[in-house]
Image (tube, rainbow, N blue to C red; front, side, top):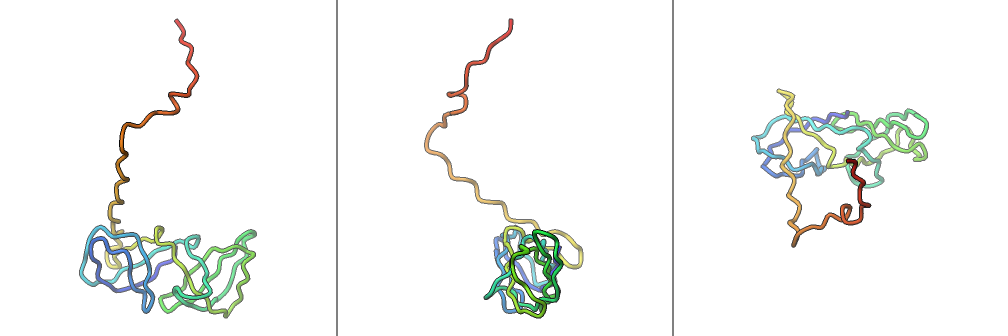
Length: 146
């Protein structure tokens, strides 16, 4: 897991944070809090390399793993590892952008280590009328044993 430090306040339902000059989408948070030190966590498989934008950094090195490679990028917020295809050309010293998959980001309070809860997802829209169980309607009759 990649851990990036940030200092920010949060409002209930907030779905972005700032990492320096970059706005990073996050899952909406359930609770607000005054400014404090937080840790943003994201796994390497949820980090993508981008030509433009995103959190920027320099490639420190790559580790070939067969069909994929682990790319370590040094950013102003610390090192970040990305799991990308081995077919993607990456060279040490290259400047790249990092995309973080918002739905996979977690936030922790730095001092306590507490995971910040996400806001409840929106309920799916109600259907307009009774639903028919199509599987039951098309199922073959079952034999009963007496």
